[in-house]
Length: 243
Image 1 (cartoon, rainbow, N blue to C red):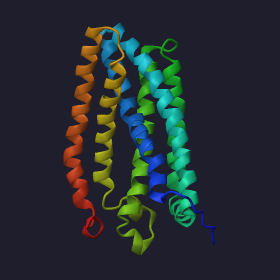
Image 2 (cartoon, helix red, strand yellow):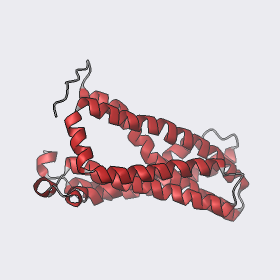
Image 3 (tube, rainbow, N blue to C red):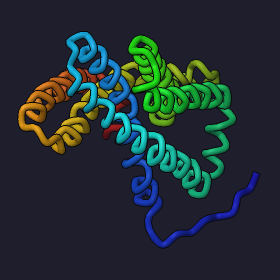
């Protein structure tokens, strides 16, 4: 199929980066932040820390607004822009991975529903059920990452897919596993960074100090995952791509 050429006054790469980079930061926080919320809630309920629970309730409002509203809008924006910039490549990407995208969108729907129930359920659900919803959210969000990671990594390192055209050869491509670990580490790191920013608005110095220490640990754990997985990821990229 022949598509019309869409000419714009600024570079294609800049236009794509303008939408994609903020989306990537927010979407990764959507995963790491979901894990942070449910883990921190579990710890706070066990220790009876009502102040920490109130912080998490306020954080979940910020979390829902940022990830579900801004994240969803920029995600749709990415599809809109790539469809205009390179419709043929977008068509090929959809045709080759249509069931992968369908599965990812299913997880995304579960993720949205769970996030809304989690936020509105703070004072309406039992502690156990509320935490279960939190884990459902994180599981759906991480599975969404799992699927998208395979598809977008194929665009950089298609591997045997070029010869076979097989879905699984493209999905489990040479950079799939190192990229998955790298992205998971980024999710945890961003959870620590974003929550430090939110904690800085706390009025109590003691509460703010305790949150800073706890959230910094999350950031350091994420960094500890990122460093080795980055070298693993870089080594998995073919030399003709990196040179």
